[in-house]
Length: 372
Image 1 (spheres, one colour):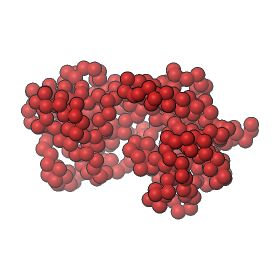
Image 2 (tube, helix red, strand yellow):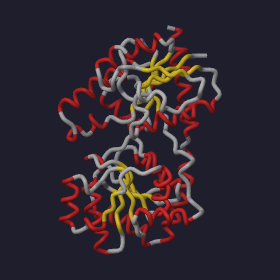
Image 3 (cartoon, one colour):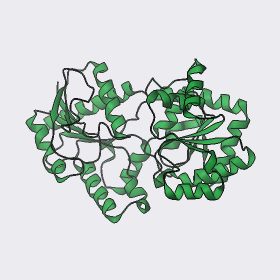
Image 4 (cartoon, rainbow, N blue to C red):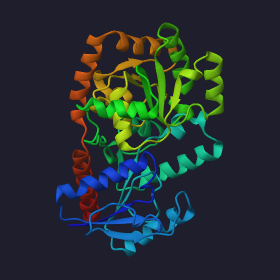
């Protein structure tokens, strides 16, 4: 039996927040004998959802601060924690192997052109410390593990691949009236191509817009829907869409509820994810769970996560992306085939499995620390 402290300061963040939330939700189902504590910002402490018998501890140390690096580990030890799990690469000092860190990607180091010198230096220093001093490093994909081994001289056995899960709420809706009501309320018309995520440079949105211009030249009834990031509010993207003559066919839904997102997936002809780098790629599995075909790039971990259940395209070739999307729209048989393969593929990913493998790592780290 061990006392595990989890840093939950990013609980409400996009991406890493989803990881923390789903891990915390799945851990109680394992019925382990371990005690769990959460370290969170004072304002978040009571908003976090967790079992009643878990300990909630307020921490004053802000994210990306000296305090988190120098003092957060000390606070975890004072709490009586045997192990601190950091769900991000900012591992505090002084834990002497009594720690587990999850590194979701190393994009700052693999795609330096998108970051400032200060951001790159910070990432290299902090990630380097984490991979050299954590009791174990968890990564979401084999691709991220390979990237870490390429950049840092660390032991391969200390880096463990644990795929993330897909929440069971993502599913094909049999009651299509629910989908139609959502489409009507959101002002969406079928058919539409769906993109889910932010619009940061590595997401490769300029290529998506160029591809969509090719698509509109052949099918002027298709729209492009963004959920999460806003295409039209990003000046350079809006200007590109205007030049391409597709601005009127783009819909920005911004951030939506889980129920609305499920409807957006269910109503789409196809999900596209043309990223230049992905550490995992939640939208691919969510779309597949909803019975929506996917077209993704060959970059990052996407081939690993999507498997043979998605059409793969070169992220530097917009015409290839356009043709892949159109082939799905035009060919009902291909759409059925991708949908069936997607349904099989998502069975590889569950949060219960993620949580179980994570607990195994806690126990291995603790056992090794006690022996030493």
